[in-house]
Image (cartoon, rainbow, N blue to C red; front, top):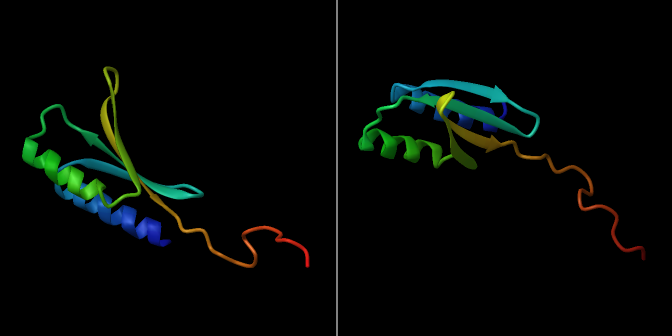
Length: 92
């Protein structure tokens, strides 16, 4: 499992420990974690949730009247550096 997957799994485990239903998905450039947020969440739980997702590269909250609230976090995969990734340089 790539390092992003390990980090995302750790985030998901900590969110699950807070009682949230989570799911983890691998994508070509990142690993994502989503968690359903119930209607009533204490201020203490929100602080803990924010501490957890702060470890991700990006995070946010999607809230709709139809689907409720979904917290998301993204951990980017590192791009391997092989060869000349900067492209062609000036000719000598």
